[in-house]
Image 1 (cartoon, rainbow, N blue to C red):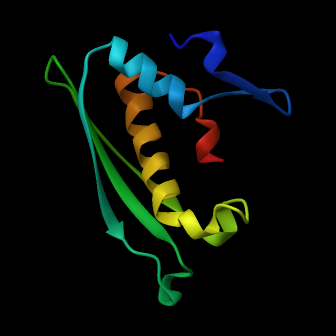
Image 2 (cartoon, rainbow, N blue to C red):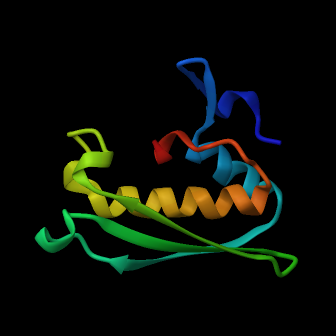
Length: 109
């Protein structure tokens, strides 16, 4: 399980930090993590970026998930970094599967 130092409480609910997912995945044999942009943000799609992450562990497990970000789903300071946020959200979701951590990552909200 993820160490307590990587848990954040927000409005009475617990969330895991991406940093904690990555740390836990490394202790569990993370071999690689790759990200592909599935959809670039544009005016036609409300500036929504979608990324696909593929995480692999050293025993052959492959975990795939997607993350998205748009101006409506991020803090105004993050808007210029929509692609990176979609990437981080995708990686967080794939790492949650790899580590069997059901807790939502704070970066996903």
